[in-house]
Every structure is written in C-alpha cells, then in structure tokens.
Length: 178
Image 1: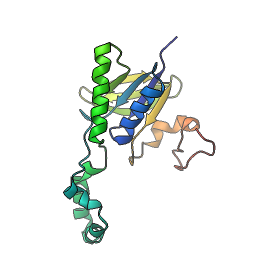
Image 2: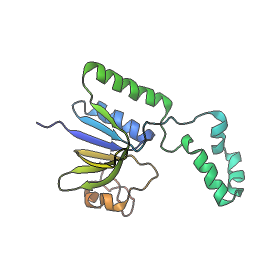
Image 3: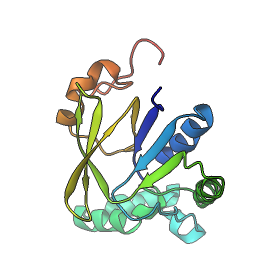
C-alpha cells in the first residue's frame, strides 16, 4: 500500500502549523512543505517594530501618501506576512533533526518551489524548481494552500473546486463542515 502524501504550500505561520499538525495527526503519512525561498523566516516581534500596529500609529499611517505607505508596509512585511513565530521554527527544526537521527524523514522541506498548477486527473501538484527552472510533479492525497492573504490564481485550482474548503470564485466557506 502506498504511503499517504500530504503537500502544504506556504512559508508563513499557518503553513508551519499545518505541516506539524498533519505530521502529528497522520504519523504514517509523508508531509511535504513547499515554499519559494531558502528558509522559513522568523517574525519580527520586537517592541519598536510592532508599534506599527498600535492604534496611535493608524492616524499617522493613514496620513501618508500611497507610495510612502506602501514602502512602509513593504519594509515591515516581516512583522506579519510570510513569517513564522521563532519558537515554532525551532520546534520544526528540532523535529526535522530528530527525524534524521532516527531515519524517518516524515516531514520534508522543499525550498525554491513555486506552485504552477494542479493536474486533477492524476492528482499531482506541479511545481517549478526556481533554482534551475525545472518542472516537477508530486502526487498528493491532500493539498493545503497556506498562502495567507495571497490569492492563488484561479486557473490553478479551478478543477478542484468540489474539494476546496474555500470557493475560488466567491471565497466563501462551505455549507458543510470539513
């Protein structure tokens, strides 16, 4: 019998949490985490940086012109977007290290991978390996798109709408629990 394969795409808090949760809930499954960069990056939780979220800052922030506001947001992106709590990074790193020691690499990280599409007939996720521009496919029994605020292109998921927890056309929750 083939080992169940669960794929997770993302580089933020949700992706890391989902990956660990799936590994715990399905100890005999292979769980892969795909992301575009080299490593999961820690959230900047320092006091001065996080003042950007204070209610006193909102008035000042909204008074900036659009270009400057966008520049400030981009500069402080690592406070909230595509970042992981440093403690969770350590937990995941320790898990990967322990897996190597015992020879059971249940969780695997796939660096420099960009999701390009899904093949609904073969149930494969198609990725571009960004380092060498190679296209690779991975079968999946479950696929999680932990993309946060980034809307995945609808043409990638359109053949899978019946399986989605969120509709790609209306972005609404399903009527039945999943």
